[in-house]
Image (cartoon, rainbow, N blue to C red; front, side, top):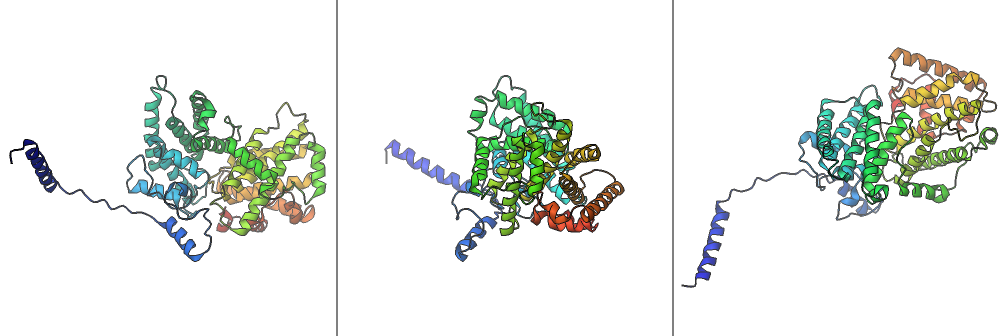
Length: 479
C-alpha cells in the first residue's frame, strides 16, 4: 500500500483510538433531581383530578416557574455548594412555615438566573426570608446573617465593577436586575437609610436604559421585578413609587374590576348608613371612593378563593396583580395633596383610613405569598393619627374609627411590629383590648364593625382570641 493519503488516514484513526484508550475517565457527578412537580402532575393526570396546576406535564421546564419545587433543569449562572442549594430549595419549597417567596417569583427568579451578580443577591434574599420566618419573635424585619452578607457582598462587588465603567458602557438589563434585587434586600433587612439611595440608583438606571421604559417592557420579568422591588419598599416606608406600574398589571386590574372576577362589591355595602355618611365627607373625592370599592371587591375575591382552597398562594397571579394596583393607588393618594379640596378634619380622617387600608392590604399580601411585609411604620403612623382622634370630628363615622383600631390591634398582636420592649407591647395590647371590648360591648357590636370591611377566613380566629386577651397564643401569630 503506497497511497500516502490512505496511509495518513490509517495512522490518524489509529492514533485517535490510542488516544481514547489512554484518556482518563471523567468523574461522574451525581446530580440530585427533585421530581415533586412532575410526580404531582403525573398523579393528577392518572387519577383524573385537577391538582391545581394550570397545564399538563410539559417537556420544557420554563412554564413550571412558580409551580413548585423544581430548579434542577435550569441553567444557573454560578456553581452551587450544599449551602447554596439549600437556599435555592427554600425558594421553591411548598412548606410555608419555612419560606414564603412565591409572590412574583416567576419574575424575579427568571431575572436572577440571567446574571451572576443578581443570582448571588437572590440567594442572599432567600437567607433573609428564612431567617425572618424562623425567628422566635416572628419579627417582620430580617436580621442580616453572615451567610446573607457573604452572598450580598459578592453581588455588590460585581455590581460595583460594572458601574465603574458605566460612563463608557450602556446600562444593561443585568445591572437593572441586580439593582432590583439589592432593593429587595434593603427593604427586607429594614434598612431604610440604604433603601432610598438604592431606589434612586435604580430609577436613574431606568432613565438611562436605552429606549427607556418602552424598551424595558420587552423584558417582562425584569420590568415586573423592578416594579415589585420598588412597590414592596415603598409600601413598607409609606412612600410614593417612582416607577409606573407595568401596563399588563393595570390591564389585569381593569379586567377584574369590570367583572371578570365577579360583581363589583361596594365598600360598606352591608351598612348603607356608614357609606352614606362617608359619601357626605368625601363625595367630592371620587378616586378615594373608587379605591375603597376596589379594596372591598378584592377582599370578596380573596375570601371566595380561600373558601375553595385555604392555601391560595399558588396560581393566583390575577389577584396578586390586582393587589399591586390597589396598593399603588393607596400609596399615591395623599391627604396633604393640595389639589384635593379638603379641610384639616377631612384630611385627618382620610389619612387614618388610608393607613389602615394599607395594613389590611398587607394581610392580603401575606396570604398571596408576599412575606415578610413589614407594617411597623404604617401602624406607628396610624396610631399617631388615632391618638389625636379626640380633636377630630368623626360625625357618623364612629364605627369606622373602631374598625381601624381593631385592624391595628390584630396586626400588632400577630407580629412584633411595634419594636418595643415586651412589657410595653403587652401593655399596649392590653389597653387596646380593654378599650375595644368596652366599645364592642356598649357602642358597637362586633358583627356591625365587620360590615366595614372584613376577611373572615383571616380575621375571625384572631379577633376571637384578641377579645379574650389571648394574643400571646402561638396560633394567633399565624398569618
